[in-house]
Length: 584
Image 1 (tube, rainbow, N blue to C red):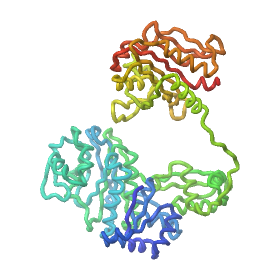
Image 2: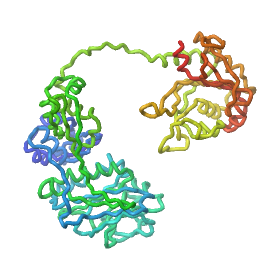
Image 3: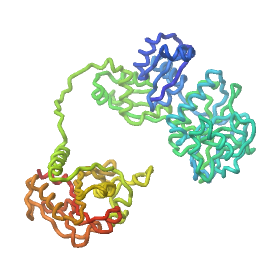
Image 4: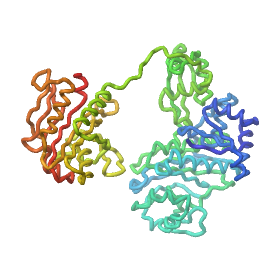
């Protein structure tokens, strides 16, 4: 959870009232944040900490990551002020500033958004808060600048239109922030490799063929995101117009970041909250978008459903008032059965109706919710499929097999090429951004995991008899998440001879335990010869239960054995456990 540090005097001034820590703690509890007072040890090490309080903020409440947002939220909560209305204004000059994104940026950071804060007045305190908010956003929402990097510049020192480009590092040369001479991007990367604050961001672009760079119409470099801004356009206490740019690999996160910065600090503009100026961003395809969006949207919640889920009973008018205290301006409609909620651009944490219901509960006060005994009696019990799996594990272990637990993720080769199959024909769930080649897909079979375990234990005495009962994952467009889990069982015998009779005997033992006879028809199970590239031709069979196939049994193909770096033959069976459970 992110934590912000606020100066007590600045906070009291913003709230218009002095608080003891106990009073402020109570207020914060009601609002849904948690303050912390420095202890004696902290004060002894840093006497200035006695003048400050720390406040722990919810990870998704980006609007509270600075004293401006926290004080504004508390004042609205206390109903001392109304939630501000944030709108962007057209350019003062009559012509919007432009930021052109060039096609080369697609190789490194393809997105950018921008805005201007006009006629802003900084004090030492607000300037520090402005910098601190950027740091908090970089660490939190921006994921250490990997998703979004923020650049702020003195607009009066640069000239539009601005260009967002990507160039070879040797062709980027400028005077970086707080440096005394110009350096190339390569020199800067070497310089910052020993700098404690910036070196953590170097790997983001270090291995890229081109580095992102933003410059104005005169060729003056504003920044080299996500590493450093330029010295020429740095903001100071005397800055009156701020140009804000956010480059990103995630456009949605960039929009949220930009909205957060301009809404928090537009209170220092003149007129208050009315200094947010739009910037036209021209995409490589030629389309133009005006930023910041500052989008307000409407959501509906049902009054009776909200009361029921929270465990309270309040009228629609009171519920609307509570939501308005949380900066969600609300109005009852439909004869008081529903409430229309306006979600402002500062509340990007509100995604679903349940988020709005949570704010009703916070504003109502969790301590004020009456404890009641639930109307339903529920008895906790193990899922039947899990209970059956545990019972089968005990019996299979008693039959001389050792249980293994393997990774649910594996490589594409493990479920396709190594088993003699084409990955296009495997109904696998693919990982969009796998960290390693070993974790590219969710497993569709338990067999590769067991074979890899045997490969790592070839020095153990033979035979190796291993089994696993776990879930596999299959694509399923009928499911809301596009995939489903199935419980499967797999057993492998690894020895100098294949030992088909051993795995067949284990299969018969499992069926005996389930009281399923070996016979054809709708009451029993049997095996039927089939061809499968994973198994040796002529030594593979389908396991059929009550007329439906539930798995396969056989001797593994020599190519499969070789690809898993094994030296001896294997026999195996793999069946679905769920049909056994349904038949029990």
